[in-house]
Amino acid sequence: MIGSVLSSETELLALEAASGDRGFLIFKHSTRCPISTQAERLLARYESPEDAPVLAIVKVIESRSLSNHIAERYGIWHESPQLLFIMDGKAIADASHFEVRGETIEGWLTQTKSESLG
Image (cartoon, rainbow, N blue to C red):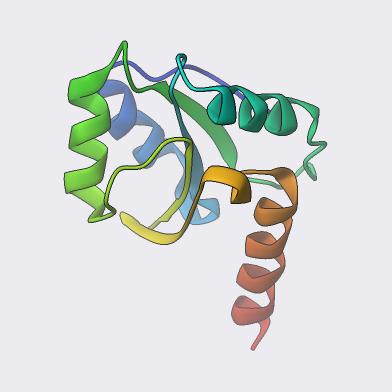
């Protein structure tokens, strides 16, 4: 399910603008962390529904300034691995460490759909 690699604020803003009302997901990945590597494998195997938000990856060591910018922009303390669900310019959900997996995304999508129908 993992999509493009983000490496600049310009790419982040473009993704945010293109995401519409579906939002998008950011996976903050440390290429030196075994827990993050496991999370990456779990997300790569995750079969998302067709209408799922795009999942972009930020390699936190290689793109430290972007990683810090994301933490500041969305008001979520940086951890890695970390998964963020961004909608309408705000982080509506986040998870870190062993919670970074497809089941977490499924739960967020189910909750978002329930709230929009409510």
